[in-house]
Length: 85
Image (cartoon, rainbow, N blue to C red):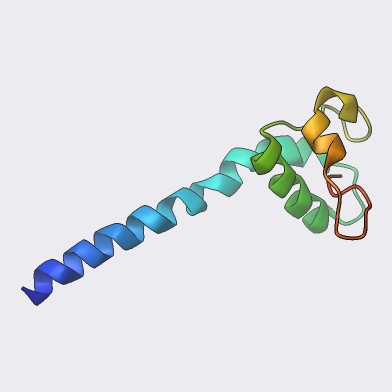
């Protein structure tokens, strides 16, 4: 009986963790191009990844072009500055 509970717990744990393991790889590719010339690439990739997941789009190029993705353009930090690089 205890073994069955462990297997069930492990199964649900895997179901909860697996989607988060694959999210960064799915959103990293657009962010790499967007952050290619950034001075702080790790920070740029972090925020670009957040914006990519929430908006489902990343503007082309390394700077500007935010009109291509209004959600990306309109995201603001808690200080009222643009959140997405």
